[in-house]
View 1: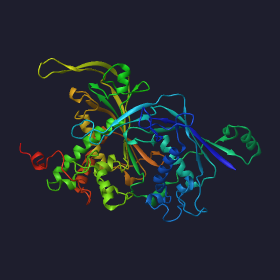
View 2: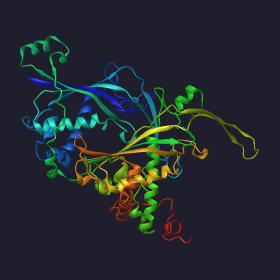
View 3: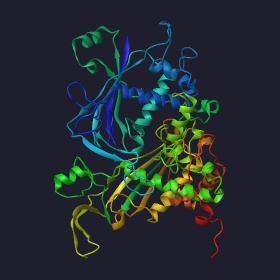
View 4: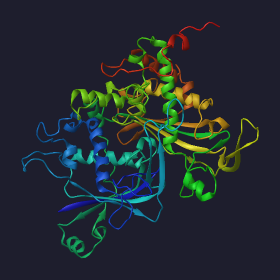
Length: 561
């Protein structure tokens, strides 16, 4: 019997939350721990994330599609795709002779060293008032494992793998090695980004007596195994298969764009952490985790999505009239209920399922507004992830006092004195990662970043005190595609590879200098998608929004100067 042991380290590039399903007095959602109270990443979470990634990538390696992608599990017998052969058949049916178990045994990833978890607060922001959305009571908190935490990583292979199975496994592990792995909850809001490092493969041949005795006598399996240097290196024979496998799909993973940039604030900045404030003796204090200042990805994402919604709705008025705007509005309000302005797609879905009397009815992406297609909704996962921000240098700190003035006496209002610990002109490194990128979504994103660069957006608290104004600098872009068909328009293929993806690195200045102005092409595609967008029957918005049903007056198609 020959088995292989794969070991490595899992490093958190952002905070991480893998919920245990338990609550406590200090938080609504605890992270996973073992029976001894030690922090872990469950083997089920590791296996599930790797399997999902393998299922999405396998068709581009020329492999048979898993039936889970068709939503017909259990209806057409056992799936015999290589992913199911590797990870085990899902729902094999009533016949005990059908299907197979997993060839991989995953172990819980155990914490190395000692760290303290933190509690994060989350709140939904009302799109009109820019304050906490009381109507939806979107306030919650959860426990988070901080950035730079390291876990041990290990799994074992108890059967020989076919060429296809090994190819799939090495390619998905390569994605994690390149820092494109995501685990747990709130991935789109800044958490869960992990990197797999120090990956090694060992071969243990239990058919040899010496190895077998060592295995039986020693608790350390690696002592009886020998390291295989090249076993985890991806092959290169998959290129010819791509022509047969190229297709777009809601669940497949064909391309990515990764934007890394620095958000440099021009003045004060604070995202309030009440607990830190109490400990430090201030009314307002910036968020800290393990002694490091943190700019939560949820705070960044909320501002960018809200502004993206405004851009899309405003442009949409150029291509619609007062009478058909509700059918053509490209961005719902994700916090709005039925019969409120810009009803959320999630509320429309729930109402639709009630009418259909089918709670499990699947909703296709075509029924979503454009904002939910890119940023996600409660019924549809996001394909845009925004990481937590971390300072590139220790920021300056200022202590500021504030006092509300009584409108009648002109003096200080009693009880309205407060102070704040403020970061002064900090600079945070941010990452935006988009899967299955399309030209129109890139154009939309570029319009949002352009407005950030020009100072139109504010982040964090104290906007009316001129806090939160920022500028973008040092923008780096990495593009990866499985084939030329998925390359954003205006770009050319390269021979550089990272696993299954052909990759290239770009700069924002380079894109603007590109012949034909690449960014303009993407923005034009965004305008075209807006002109063509129309909501399906039963998914139109119920009431209008900030425009008060007078679009022609507030947003005329022609302006006389």
